[in-house]
Amino acid sequence: MSIESPNVSASEVLQETCNYIRSLHGEMNDLSDRLSQLLAATQNDSAEAALIRSLLM
Image (cartoon, rainbow, N blue to C red; front, side, top):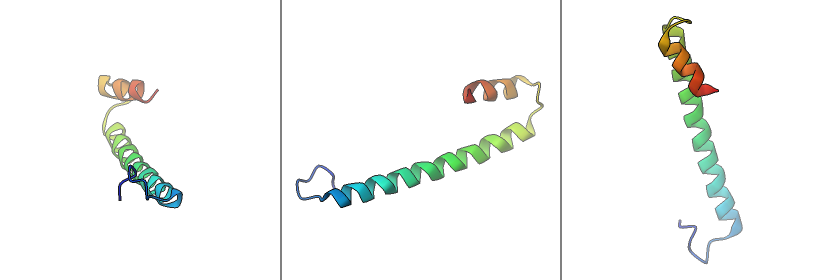
């Protein structure tokens, strides 16, 4: 389905948008888990931990 098609209904666009948002939400959850694991594996006062914290702010 292409959103550019003039025959696409509003409900189809909304459904595709919702699917995309769900996909992004899943990716964010995965990244959050990975960052948590990375932070847990580093010392709290290390340069790596400081860099990760600065990126999250």
